[in-house]
Amino acid sequence: QVQLVESGGGEVQPGRSLRLSCVASGYTFNKYGMHWVRQPPGKGLEWVALIWFDGSSKYYADSVKGRFTISRDNSKNTVYLQMNSLRAEDTAVYYCARGGDYYDSSGSLDPWGQGTLVTVSS
Amino acid sequence: DIQMTQSPSSLSASVGDRVTITCRASQSVDRYLIWYQQKPGKVPKLLIYSASSLQSGVPLRFSGSGSGTDFTLTINSLQPEDFATYYCQQTYTTPYTFGQGTKLEIK
Image (tube, rainbow over all chains, first blue to last red; front, side):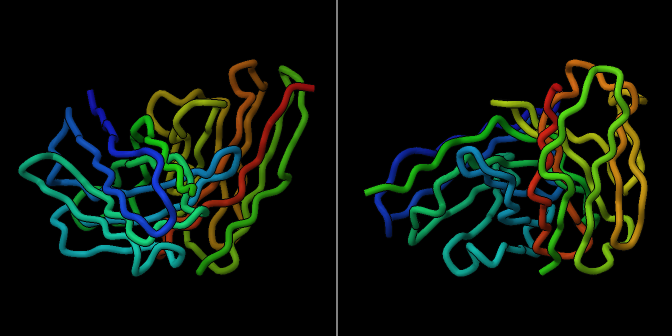
């Protein structure tokens, strides 16, 4: 079955960096776009970033643009989120989710990984 | 950016009730509207895509409608397992914004 497993979360000081990983299995990874979505503790969902199936296009939320970078390694079935210049307001559970196939960038997000918690605190 | 506004933010209902949750977009998103369900401590689950298409495995008591800027999620004959938070999301244009969520509680 399709499975997404995130890792790389933890506690980090403001201004520092962290890289999240999401390993996919159970489907042809290089056919699908991938998203990152975050959820601050006790709050709602915020879409963070999207990368196309081949990595040729990337899109970001305004709140992370210029600080976060999404990338993927199709040979490793893995999508990454490099997070730089972290702020307290970046504290959240970060989920990866599969998107639409090929150029269907509007496809729904399904399934989702179990999430990894990032805490930005001094 | 397109703003997505859900109403109500919270809702109390009883088992067997019919409930409707509304999602309004600040500009047209055509039918690129998705509904998710999230239970406490759990991962969001896809319910409805393309405004009205039921995801495989989702019970038929869930339905979605709308296009353009106004959308609804309807749950017929509420079951105990339906008490959760529901989110809409537009995937018409990036950033793919979510509504703030509607928490459905047991009356």
